Image (cartoon, rainbow, N blue to C red; front, side, top):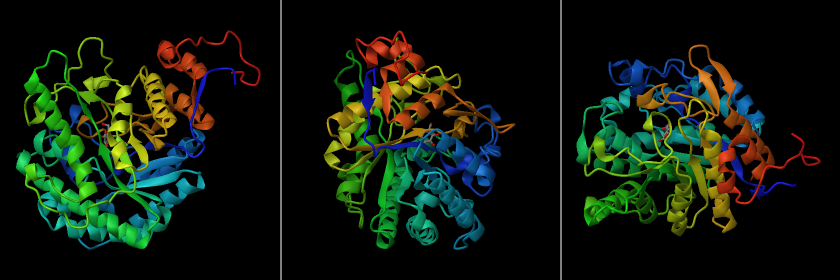
Length: 452
Ligand code: BGC
């Protein structure tokens, strides 16, 4: 191999990620479906509709994922399909999930399954969902059903996706259903109940499948300050970082809710994680607020920012968050990482540079075992509808046409070769060559055996 190459371990998981409501379509029985119909809730009045039509044809996109050379995929189960009414389980829906999971395995794609990814059954909402402690019993019952009927097909589990993002978006930012601002206190109560749900689900899964790998997907964000910021701003950034990043992780570790937030021990919670699942997107600067305007959404001059002012492209942040969780001493999976970039201008470089951070971490023997790119395909981006496109594959939701993006071709080369190289960088993100591979130049000719 003539070009400079960063190799990844042979057992590395090359994945992509999606969630049920964002791709399945026709999820008529959950809170988002109702929310989308209310005027002004979703950008441009978009609706999930058929989404990516996975309920009928996930297999077609799994074919594309397999062609891309991925060997893992993270998806979620839709509670409102599995249990459409309290204690009533829909065996046809469960059978459909079996087909999808089996289709993944037949294609050499290992499933990682999330039990809760931002959507709730309508009956649960009526009962107060995360603000009613009965949810712990309900979540445990739902998990037990999934374990009994699908557990043989699921080696890796995520109980709850991004609990703090969910709470922030719903209780403080007011952009997730039901969008009646519930405030900080109700949000904290929800976090506490989510921790109870997590613990109950963890033990329910492990009791039947002790070898299953169970964790949560925790978004870690960096809350940075600028050199000119004073003491108070720095203190505030540290506080928010603790609240957003550390409270959940420490509670999973030691089984306690922090004293500053009301304290208390949470039954059977300590040690309920077999790995660290990390979603990483960007860093933030902060306003002094505990409401929707907390994030300054301004990254300063020179920052590379993705579509819709979603976030700064800040690959080194991935290395920083990996370092942050090393003390937990568990295998690490990057369970989401991506950006909205409809024109696919930034995504190739984004992928290369974020994977370089992982390679760097692995070269120090930090235990990063896999990477799940968000997302395999464009999908329904919650309150931002179809306006933000995260896919390696472009989707036209009207015609359901798929088009592989350039970044999808790059990811294919990466997954198939278990590497990133100067040659790939020269072809897909030439501006990054001096950053990624200082001193390397594109080869003036195709090397023997490497002709492209
Ligand atoms: C969520 C996804 C979402 C992605 C991009 C994550 O916070 O888990 O559902 O689509 O970010 O915004």
